[in-house]
Image (tube, rainbow, N blue to C red):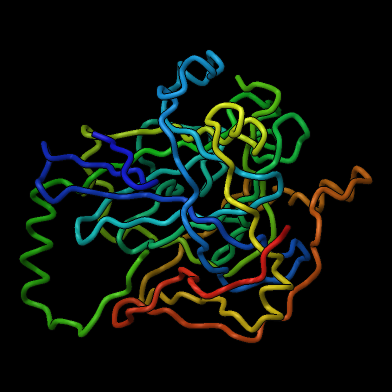
Length: 337
């Protein structure tokens, strides 16, 4: 069962276990420079709004209604990251953009695969900011219009058909979770824990932007730990600001400040350390994808406004466990007009 609560997708699987719950949200953030450098993790600047497609059925394209799910607004060239919160109950979550897996570059499949691993393991993986293009490196999720060749979907399939985001969540089997709880009860307690906080012509997809340091962690539980009989899936359609206003009557959030303006204000970036967890490696398919800036340069275009490099001086290290810091940025930040 999936519900929409305060702009979060909440997956509950009570038929597996009463504690099987996972919340997923999409955080507005800085678009890091697409300049070939590796940046720390940018902050969260609040959730993107989510709306049920069915609430605006009379205005929705037929194809959008047929696939269902929720609607989310993004400006062209705006960036986002995905935040996971499952408490202590483990989940395996697959994430695709345009029905292309963000971890492997393979086409969407309704099952988990380990060779290569095509899913994130929660709660070990608190966030996902982009496409895994090297071990410990991702390229940021950046919104671009379908049909212009920028999205990963178009680069790897040659089609601009789906766009948006696709999610599927699998809970851990109840018996494995109970064994895990029993094992944890015999371990020393820590003082704290990390808080985690066919497409119409104007459809939006996600494309690879700048590089940042982020590890995607290997599944130490094993494929057999996941209950693949009880999966929940959701399609997140991305609308540009004009289409969002026409469909919902709401203004989308303002765009985030530029990375250079944010860094100049002395506001923090983040690094996350997973302790002894092992990061998965990239695949050949995603290693070879071109970024938005690279495609634009090849076509004589400048698709990313204000793409200047940023001088990052303030980086906060988040560690698991033992820290009560989060990536959300509540302080006043420079805004774009």
